[in-house]
Image (cartoon, rainbow, N blue to C red):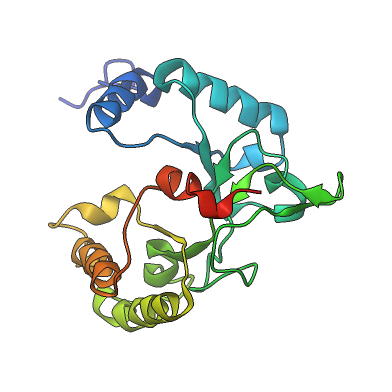
Amino acid sequence: MRPTSKSRVKGPSYDALRPRLVETILETGAEIGLHGSYTAADHRERLAQEKAKLEALAGTVEGHRFHYLRGDPHRNIASLPFRYDTTLGFPDAVGFRAGIARPFFPWDFERDAPADVLEIPLAAMDATLAEERYLGLSAKRAWPQLNALLDWGAANGGAFAILWHPDRFDPLSSGGWDSLYSRVLDGVQARGGSCVSAGELSSHSTWSK
């Protein structure tokens, strides 16, 4: 018997799951940041509400990235209510959108001064490499681009963020992207670099004003 719409069982909502998810992340000692929603890039008050909602569960939230990388460094990144942001990157290419391969303070044109939020440039994202609307590469074919990025970063003292979505860590369905992430981390360490959280990187005295 097929259930009717009224009797169909619904799964728990994200609002119901969020507290346990935050608790689990905090138990591991990992950092929690806000992934500002698609429309929050255009509505500062919405971003403030999202930040407050997360902080009610996680405590102070200092890091942020806009959904779909919808960040303009001169409009809605420079004035973010966070200590650092990792939005600034290309959705369709590997590299540095501002031409800067190290954390920096974007220029705030409204104040005609450096912004208070530190921008950690996003150099590579799994979706950029994998999705057909962008580069459409397999994990195996994506490695040369990432390898070249690591070589360049090591040669020039780069410090930047990479982004891998949670669904790419399931070995049964990731198509090799989970192994590629590990290969990137190994590549950083093999070149004498270190892999740290965005919060730890942003706290380094090198980037102080």
